[in-house]
Amino acid sequence: MKKVISVDIIEEATPGIGTTIGGVLLKDGAVNGTNSAYVAHSLAAAANDFLVASGSGVFVKKTQLETQTILGIRSNYTAQEEISEGTGGAISLTAFCTYLNIDTSGDAFTLANSTVSGQLKKIILRNDPGSAEVATVTGEFTGTSKTLTFSNAGEFVLLYWNGTIWVVIESGSMLNMTDAPVLSTV
Image (cartoon, rainbow, N blue to C red; front, side, top):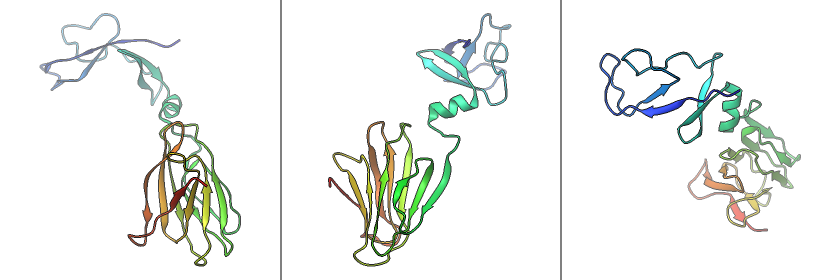
């Protein structure tokens, strides 16, 4: 059963407690004594418990794992992955950054839709085996775009999943000011 508490906003400083202007006063039943700028008793049932808003003025206690789920943080999330030359295939959603290494014939990759609104994904082309070879990434991107094409080593894109599509929030090159991946509808 979820424990629901009421929330009032403290409008001025409370003597002896410190400045609490704009702070939140949590009340559970009767307020203890004349000093009401504290939680009347512990709401935490375990280490790392959190209070999370579940409606206007209503908070519920959540565990660390439940809070990570709400924030879109995956427990199996890794910092980076590297896809080797010649393999192509699916780009992982559980790694923040994916390095692409392509071979002399180029490679094709896919980026699936995320299930976590707000997820960030960075993709970087690590190598450039020749002038005509490219790495293509197919997915649901900004607008009607379906393909990202990486042509030069150092090109990168930072994506944000808005719940429907991957939005490009940054693209460019780590090596110069002129190269960047190209978005297209093909």
